[in-house]
Image (cartoon, rainbow, N blue to C red; front, side, top):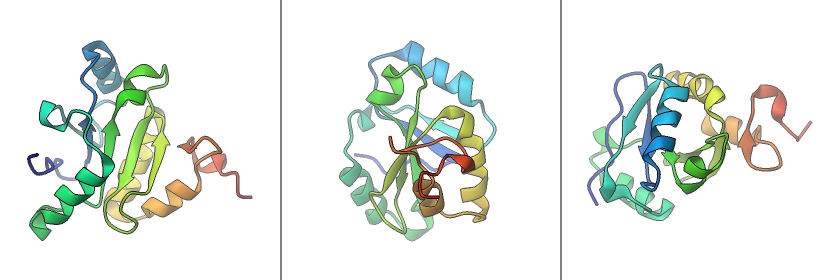
Amino acid sequence: MPSLPQPDDLTSLILRTDFTDDRAWNELRQTVGTDGASYASDPSFADVTIQALIDTDTAADPDHQLTYVFLADALTMTDDEHPLLALDLFDEPGRTFRVAPRWFLDISANLGIGNLGFDEFADAADESGTYRGSGASQSD
């Protein structure tokens, strides 16, 4: 497996891991847009496991390690809402939560500047494990 692609400056990487539906991938890209997003669609990442992504990132030169990545996986492609899988690669490698595309830019911007941590978004996910905005926390 190649090293993880590097996102453009001030953006977050959306890595395609499911290649069963090009229409769904294009729809996701249109929904998310280009603000805050860098896209990678490399078939060598097809069906990659979370552990393989963690191992690949850990093995990378420190200057090329990522702290998180968003995955466009099978659920992203088949669910009408196209929820991305956010994956922590730094503080708690392997911790995940889902995020609806409408909240992607908010998360990307805050993680990118270090305003909020991955754990804060993950902790605010609803009972399904999906972040739906800051008012979505079920731990009031």
